[in-house]
Image (cartoon, rainbow, N blue to C red; front, side, top):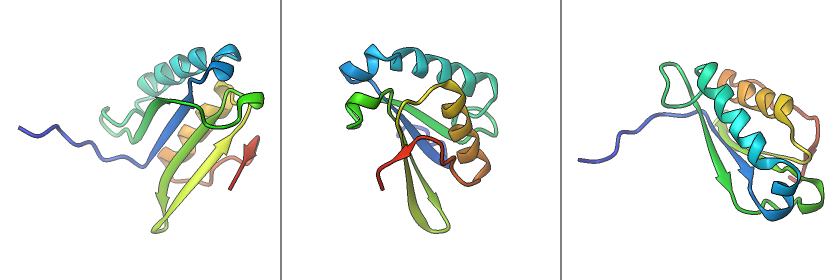
Length: 111
């Protein structure tokens, strides 16, 4: 029997590299996970649409915790890379993904 598929609108990755962990990325991941659960934004909740994953290094070692988001919007793959991510910013990114709204510009880096 194949695994059950849950459609999503986007995927957030929280860096768990050594430098980001020293800046609180493990706590950020846990807080964001709890928020997605409580707000029913998690992809496996009724009406939810956001996936969350711990990742390896995202390349912002001196500016962590780093957060990355991928989603399809308007037929195109959109990505957002964030440095010095904290819970309020991560929650805004998750909400934007769920609502299919523009991603926040605060603390974005990269492409």
